Image 1 (spheres, rainbow, N blue to C red):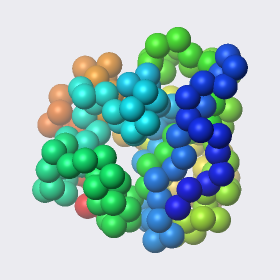
Image 2 (tube, helix red, strand yellow):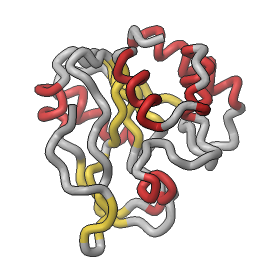
Image 3 (cartoon, rainbow, N blue to C red):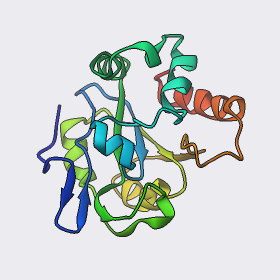
Length: 175
């Protein structure tokens, strides 16, 4: 299920994000900040090969998601009631670091909830995404901030990230 949105990439001096991955039965939403250069180029969420997102989900679900084609990963995500999107619809940014994000525009979370009314928990993938927590809580959604899966977050080991993400997925009913 997709919300109307411009094609991801560049529009003038702004970068434009990707549409959400969700289904009507989505219960838990992982919210990143904004796709990095590798993700935008590939038109794939968490497209950087060193990002821990797909290996973490693979470990939690015991499915080798990393080996699957992207379309099959998305099918598995939807089947399990997980959604993926970003806090920002567009921004200006050089490179891929969250610290370089300028003039971000929030995504339309109310419209997302109309398309996926079963969402009960939002998991923020890192601190930049968590800046949208107030907006989401105003819509009645609880939020949890998780350690970023980005390769730039080297202070957390994979095992430590896995423990945090596993607990959050259990809370969200998608473990």
